[in-house]
Picture 1 (cartoon, rainbow, N blue to C red):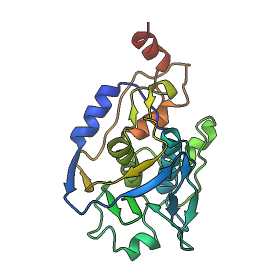
Picture 2 (cartoon, rainbow, N blue to C red):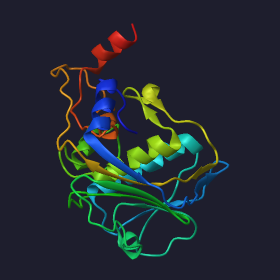
Picture 3 (spheres, rainbow, N blue to C red):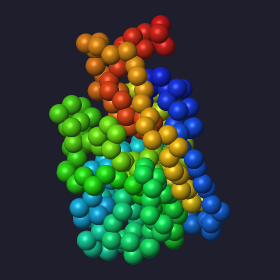
Picture 4 (cartoon, rainbow, N blue to C red):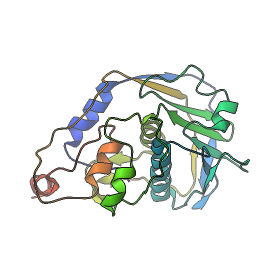
Length: 241
């Protein structure tokens, strides 16, 4: 659940100008992810996925559940998967598809629709530690992708959720997250291969408040500009007097 608002307009604008995008006109393949609130697709990771890919897969599953009501199963590429699949992060299965093709540049990512296959991959740091995906437990934050580490697969997932599922993040917490409800979700579109213009993106909010909202950090990940927790209560007081 990306951490959803704190200087939202600034961060979204910064993300927009920091990345150059290329959407190529390819054959549009449709991939069914959920039908009538039941999972259809499986999220597939490498047997030893990167930290960024693990985190991205959890974020993808969370948001798709908010959109469709379905909890998509997860699997590794150690065995074949029946039905539609979502390949999150590079793996043996993406290599079998000869993807990403040209090597990914720093923080670059790729979204591709193939028959019964959605590919969401990016340039990730070679960090293979297990991710503890529990936004209510700050201890787990140390296992998430680090501040300026390569996490292109996370960018691929957030861009996909925004472009093709209509998800929006306006402020931290559930109130600021918009997930359009669709019990049946079929996605399709042209390839997106997006590369970096600004190497470092960061928000500099006022720090030092004793107030801490556990969702702020994750929201910043969702907006492609990781930052530390800010004075969320003051922001809320201004935004919602």
